[in-house]
Each structure stands twice: as structure tokens, then as C-alpha cells.
Image 1 (cartoon, one colour):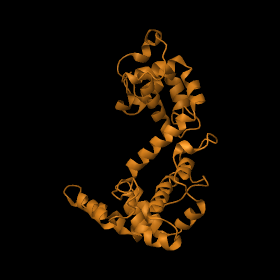
Image 2 (cartoon, rainbow, N blue to C red):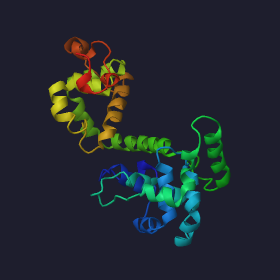
Image 3 (tube, rainbow, N blue to C red):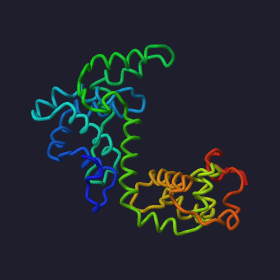
Image 4 (spheres, rainbow, N blue to C red):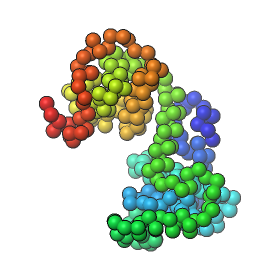
Length: 276
């Protein structure tokens, strides 16, 4: 499903958005997550060393998944892998959370983690990745992400989600932009004078940043996952710079301290250690 076909309300969080865009059925999901090779494939696909591609993850568990759910297609199985890879990141108290036991997966299916045994330098890792691509052959050939890994797919899915969220959050965004200091900060970001954390400090001040925003992991939009807030601010800075958002003409005169110099506190590590 295209996200533009989703209803305006309720406004979904990232996981529910993916559930609906991928047309995931909870009853099918429950049956798939009872399959050891399915959970192991997700462990390999999301493991930090990679290089399990989405297509290979589905290929690895296809026989058992098809046995349990005969109507399932290869491409649809990849979407279930994709969604479960996000649900595993939810808080354990969230009813949608799905646990992945990485230690058991590595013990029971070491072939999914073979890359850890290969030298860091040399052709072995690239050869291993190519071997897996050859092994899965034409599996799920119609899926756009079959040859991509977890990080790049998550980035693409989050980009789509931010398109959806911003299209349905104009009231929240308008309220955010009603503060002229915010507009000045976005303008300075667009001029590449501030990073996201530089924006936070210059716009809100260090006390507020430390005692409120930092404590909440820099949440500016309450219904948006914390780590996505920075991406929305970055997108708004691009819109300001490109003229899609109108600015008062005197921001640099009113708020010179926001535009001063080149300030990216992330370059200096923890905020406590930043230069004064």
C-alpha cells in the first residue's frame, strides 16, 4: 500500500505505519514467529556485522514458512521479515514487541553468522556476500529491497514514514515554526552553521537543553519517535533554505547569537566537554 492511501487519522507510529504499508496480518505473523528459522533469519539480517541481505533472510526460512503458510509469496515473506526487524526494537512492555534471541540463533544456525569467522582484511567477506546472493538465485525477484541490507532498508522506510508524518502533522509543525528563534535556528542550519545539537542549544539555551530536552532525548514533537526528531528538523531546515517556508527578513539582526560562527557540538563529544 502507498502511504498516501492511509487515512489521515489515526496518525500511526513507525511500526504501525509499516504494518499497514506492508499489509501485515497479525495472525500470519504469530505463526511465522513460531518458526525457528524465521527468527534466526531476522537475527542474521539485523545483526550488526551483516551482511545478510533481506532476500537471503527470506530464502533461508522459506521452506518452513511456506509449509506453515501455503498462500504466502516469496515477496510477502520479505515484508514480514522487514516488519519483525522493527518490532524487535520496541520496548519489551509494548504488546507489539517480538523478542529475538541472538545467542540461540548463532548457536543453532552458525551459517548465518559465518562472516564473524572471516578475516577483516582480504576478499573473503566480499566473496561470502556474493556466495549468498548466488545461493538465493531469483528468490523474491519482484521485491525492490531483496539485495539490500537492514541499514539501507530501514533508512528508506524511515524516509517514507517521515514523508507520511510531515504530511499529516502540519498543525504541529506550524506551532513549532511560530517561534522566531526556531526559524532563525533552521535558517542557520540551512546555512550549514549549526548541527541539530547546535540548533537545540542555540535556540533553546543550555539550561533548557540540559534539564528538559536532553532528559527526553531531545524530543521536539511528542508523537514522533525520539531519534526521528532530528530528521524532521533537518528537513525543515532544507525547506527554509529552499524557500518553501517563509522567513521574517530580520532574523539575523534579531538573533545574531544563533548565527554566530560554526557550531556543531557533536564534534566535541559529550556536551559537558564542549569548548566554552
